[in-house]
Every structure is written in C-alpha cells, then in structure tokens.
Amino acid sequence: MPSHAETLAAAGLSETDLIGGSLTVRSPLDGAEVAQLAETSLADMPAVIARAQGAFAAWRQVPAPRRGELVRLLGEELRAAKAELGAVVTLEAGKITSEGLGEVQEMIDICDFAVGLSRQLYGLTIASERPGHRMTETWHPMGPCGVITAFNFPVAPWAWNAALALVCGDPVIWKPSEKTPLCALATKVIFDRAVARFGDEAPEGLLQVVVGGVDVGEALVTSRDVPILSATGSTRMGAAVGPKVAARFGRSILELGGNNAMIVAPSADLDMAVRAIVFSAVGTAGQRCTSLRRLIVHNSIREDLVAKLRQAYGSLTIGDPREDGTLVGPLIDQGALDGMQAALSAAKAQGGTIHGGTPVDAVAGGAYAAPALVEMPAQTDIVRTETFAPILYVMGYETLEEAIAMQNDVPQGLSSCIFTLNVREAETFLSAVGSDCGIANVNIGPSGAEIGGAFGGEKDTGGGRESGSDAWKGYMRRQTSTVNYSAELPLAQGVKFDI
Ligand code: NAD
Image (cartoon, rainbow, N blue to C red; front, side, top):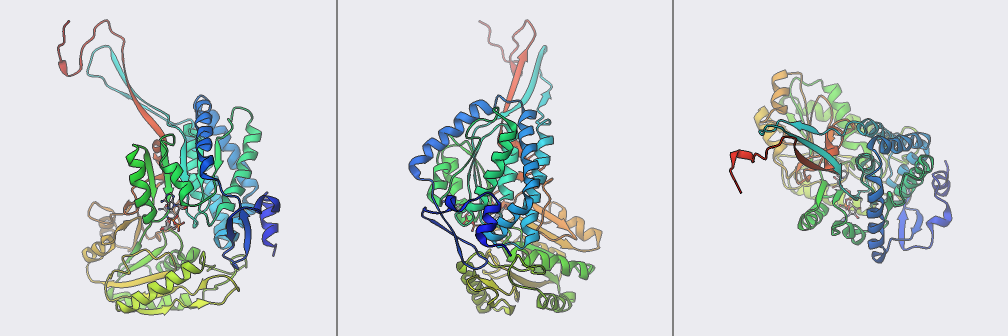
C-alpha cells in the first residue's frame, strides 16, 4: 500500500506544496494529517475574480467547438490520470477504490458529453407576427462561474459544472470543500496539462482554485462579477447562499441535501431489490446526496425483506477502503460518526428498533461504523432529517397512495424509486401524482445517476439542475433578437404610433 505522501506525489502534489499553511487536511482513512495548506486570503479574492473576468473577455470569443477541444483534451488527461486521481479521492474522501475511480470516470463522461455539446449550443428561430421580420433566440456566454463543492463528491460535481461552463464560454472559480481541497489541486494539475496542450487560446485564469472555508465561498457568493454561482452541499448552506445570490440578481444553481426513499411493492423482485438497497444505503458509507435513507415496504413482505437485509448487512466488509473486498469505508470524520450516533439515539427515542450502527474499530484514527437498519413505527422527525451516514429507516405501508404520500412527505426532493413488476404502480409513481423528486427510478436504486440526464432535485434540495440534458442553459444567457428586413416599421400587437 503506498504511503499518503506517495499517493499525493503520484497525483502531482509534491510535499513542499502541502506544508506551511493554516488549513489542516486529514485523511479519513486513519485521521492522519496529510497537508497544512495555504488558504486563499479574502484580500486576494477581488484579484481572483478580476482574473476570471479577464479570462472571460478572451474565452467568450473563442468559437465554442474550439472550447470543446480544450474539454476533449481534459477528458484525455483525466483518462491518463484516472488511477492517480481516484486514489486521491479515496485518500481524502474515504471512498472505496472502485467508487473513487467511478468518480473520475464520471468526470471523463461529462467531458465527452460537453465536447459534443460544444457543437450543439442550439438557439431557436421563431415565427414573427410581423411581415418581413425574423425572430431568433441565441445563447451567449454568461461570465465567470463560481463552483462550490461538498466533501462527499470532491471532483465529479466540479466536472459537471466546469465541463459545461467551459464549452459555454465561462471561466470557472472553484472553491472545494475545506475537507477535500487536495482533490481540487490534483484536478487542477490535470487541467493545466490539458491547457498546455491546447495552447495560447486558453487565457490565464480560465480555471482558478481557491482554498478555504465559508468566508472564501462567500466572496464568490456576494460578488456581482460572478454571475453564476453553483453550490453543492447541505440545505443549511443553500439557505445561506441562495438569498445572497438572489439579492444581487445573480443566477444560482443549488444542489443540496436529499432524503431519498425506495418503495418496495408486493410484486417486487426481492433479490434485485436487496442488491439495490444495500448498494444505495451503505455505498460511500451512506454519504451520497442520493443515498437511500428511507425504505417504504409493503406490510405483506416487510418481515421477509428486513430478514434478507439483516443477513446482507451482516456480510459487509467494513474497513480500509483501499483494500480489495472492502465495501464500507470510513465516515469523513469523528463529527460525522457522532452525528450518526445521535441520530440513532433520537430514532430509538422515537420508537425505532435498531440493528447495527455501532462504531467499528477498523483502522486506528478513522471513524468507521457498521451501517444501521432501523425499523420505525412511523415517519418521525428524525426520519424526515438527512443524517449524512449509513442509516436506513424501514417503514411499512398498505396502499400505494399511502406509500407515495410518505415518500413525498419530507422537506427534501432529490431522488426516489419504486421496485415493482406492476406497470400500473410503476407508471403511477412516475406520473404527476407520483414522486415529487427530481429523480424517480423504477427497479433501480436512488443513487448512481448517469451524466446524460439532468441531475438535481426540488424543495429543500434547491431546484438546480446540472450535468446532462439541457442543463447547459444554466451557464449561458439567452438573447431574443428581432430583425426587420422590410421597408416598413410595423409595431407588435398592431399598435399605431404615427409621427
Ligand atoms: P456543507 O454544506 O457543509 O459544505 C459544502 C460546501 O459549501 C463547502 O465547500 C463549504 O465550505 C461551503 N459553504 C458552506 N456554507 C457556506 C456559505 N454560507 N457560503 C459559502 N460557502 C459555504 O456540505 P458537506 O458536508 O460538504 O456535504 C454534504 C452535504 O452536501 C449533504 O447535505 C449532501 O446531501 C449534499 N450534497 C448534495 C449533492 C447534490 O447534488 N444535491 C451532492 C453532494 C452533496
């Protein structure tokens, strides 16, 4: 097993870059201090933002397919450095090796998507009501895009934003989580390789990484020179950020907390459901925004399903995420483990029966826990709260209507799913009277989305959409133009104004 320093060095982060600052970075694998990073000072932020504005002035003039070429090179460099960057994700966020690599693959996928998109930033031609007139709608670059990211997906959401922003003509200023800044610095090394191959057309300051906490993020949030602010993190963060961006009439893209459910109907393929439940509830140690947190099971199969799950949970290997065979790595830190234990105490006080959930002494210095299954008598307050840990609450239902009402009766609206072989149930779940979430799946768990669809959720999840489909429109400004090629000047709606 390489040392932490060796893992970082392989990703282009030398020891001298990582010492002498005030931000202590620890690995959740064993609690070891891996860096003392220099933070970006607040006094430097105006210059950072001015550099991004300068880059915008040049980048918006580079044709979009050429901008796509830079993103194509970025995808190539990511392919070449997949193992090294994936290892940094594992080191700093605690993901098992396969999930660390999966996150980098997601970056590569969105680069591929964005390259194609760079030739498809289509506008519209609209029928004008006036003779000799033509109306069009054109999409233009918008300006610097601030990207604030969370610890649990330290690189992929940046790529969802950056790959699109760059082909749309927008420079990016990235403020990673203070818990995972090294992933951002390692990504910047890879980005710089792509820029070196691309050449001079890429202006200085096209991507800048700023290191620090809430105050550094706030400098982006409050700046009128950062017209787009994309922020991924807790609902608490979104509640602070959203109004500040709105107050300066900026555009925010908010990707906030989830409280995702699965409905398991009587006709469900239970073996398939068990596999989907375990992956989505315990994968990434329950620290995905799309992690499965609520299981709403038909009463007729509830006992059977809980028994199968208890058996599956009993076979999970918990430990160092770099080891082959490990399925559950550490929580990000001791605070997260304390939060998990507090939630379990609250669940017990609210009538829950708890299976598992105890701390595990897997690797000294790390915060490891056995995933918890908690049978609840009802959807109580603690169930309606997102606890960022592997806790799965199980509740029963009688009618599909009741199950859908329960699924929707939480503040968050990110991801949801139903396991059923009954087409009426599946279609009802996906219909206007079904799930109220941004993501609704059938016979697939709530986590592990592909990049081709728009990603995001409603209500306390913030309403933002990133990644595929037409999410690119969030990074451009729309211009409606009317051209009069006649010799008359008719006014719309037949208005007369003769002078
Ligand atoms: P967090 O809210 O503590 O921090 C996220 C980021 O926001 C960090 O970079 C942090 O420094 C910054 N931040 C916090 N308050 C800020 C403020 N007032 N102004 C500017 N920046 C601020 O979240 P976390 O603990 O890193 O991540 C876990 C949370 O993120 C969970 O709630 C999870 O569901 C959510 N999440 C959502 C998605 C999604 O796509 N919907 C994806 C990943 C994580």
